[in-house]
Length: 112
Image (cartoon, rainbow, N blue to C red; front, side):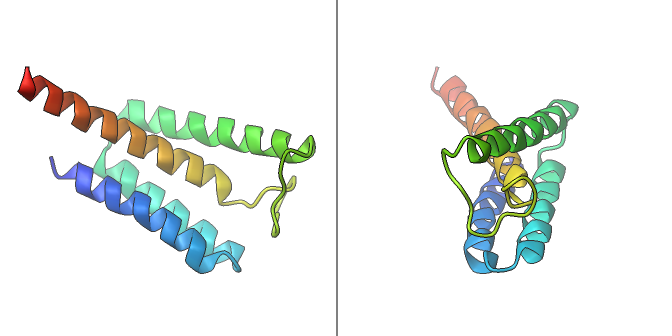
């Protein structure tokens, strides 16, 4: 399966991008969103798309809530105290977990 290396690489690059561009919200937003598009393209299914969107919405909702109640804060918030790229981090991580589960399931089936 060729999608696993692409999704894994994009997941690693997501964190590299955040570290590299953390001073520039626009660059971070565009780069992390593009990595999410590549991840979705590599592992395309409607189920993955729905999970991506749901995690995006839940992620931004929880981030806004946690910032609002004072659990944490960001140095460079955009809207509602949260950088715009944060929901893409949640969604990209979710796709990685889905792909990881599929790889582990496939390996376990081969062992059985």
